[in-house]
Length: 206
Image (cartoon, rainbow, N blue to C red; front, side, top):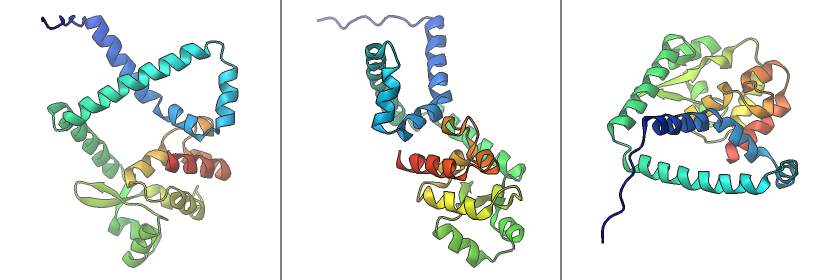
């Protein structure tokens, strides 16, 4: 029995596949917003869509494709591609250090006027979070932003619970549909604490 022939993938189809992945990445935060909706809200939204059956089929197909991609990535996580991705992530984090968007332990304690013991206590209670870069812990400089209420920031950080530090960083600094495309930091500056707290709860429970 002959194996089925593999149809070569044209450059145009490769480009389309790459565009699809980039679109998925661009809309991850929008997709996460759907998880913040109740079942009733989601059903109400679907009622307003004419081609609901097409959406259901598309979601099932997309879900299966993404599962296959995730499996491939897991099998090849130490591949040159994965090392390149991890290297780029490290470079991006190092740029945050250079821009002083994140601060070292001595810098954050001096900026906040607290002791190292107080810093450790804040991290252990989830009021603050650490961000590992090259084996060293850094901390978000926005905790000392005079335009933000530090107590409210700490309460939002506590809502995010035990999520990894970089996931918390992503939450605070990424635009969110439920916050009218604002980042949670900008939303807090706009006085939207309750909305940010709700978004944080949804993010933590995803």
